[in-house]
Image 1 (cartoon, helix red, strand yellow):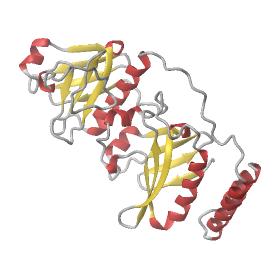
Image 2 (cartoon, rainbow, N blue to C red):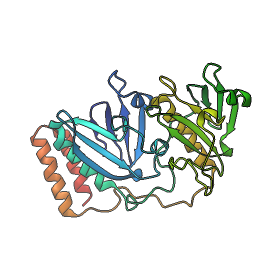
Image 3 (tube, rainbow, N blue to C red):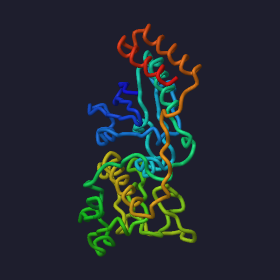
Length: 304
């Protein structure tokens, strides 16, 4: 598409096969966005696109990822607050017509597998090396090895007796991340074949039948626990996502699937005509420049 749509806290840059989301670094920008900096989202990773009214005179354009496509959301397991959702672009309400145009353009690029869960991660996780301070220790990840170094002021006697820990990614089966904004937040590493807590069930954890109880995170040398100011979301969640992606990549390689075509098929001429009309409305309203109008119209006509 080659276009740019600037919103509050982020800018979306549309390419032929993906959208690059660049996050602002202002003091009002959520710290998770500042930590992520930018993310490239392939259109093949999306299931749908929505446009809804927002708060205080805004509209929200949201690209909905396919289940299993993004390690960050898989690690979060539904615990992210709406304000921390990296797939939301908030715009002033007066740009609603323009947002609707881009929503339609994105929907037209979704492939036939959009309604299906992804068989592998399609969005890249934050890169190692990474580290953060939890309440009871310091967690580090170099891309192949996760390490926990205990703090004498916070670690339990059980962890001190076990000593500092190192976990090769190849020996892990998954992770559990519980948001530090909830009670008893923690990051737990699961060995291959381990079970998730019965009340956890997150997609970042491998479950095994018959196991119902495990050691509490503050007593588990394979866990670090969070506290006020220790293990905040913007530090611990990207860390968890990076570990999860590495764990999945070391497990059995899934059957390769054919790439999802994006924009390869010809569109219905009636649909092209409607988009050109919509583009003309944007042009007359001053939301699209003469050059942008001419270039986009030529692109649409080329698809006939």
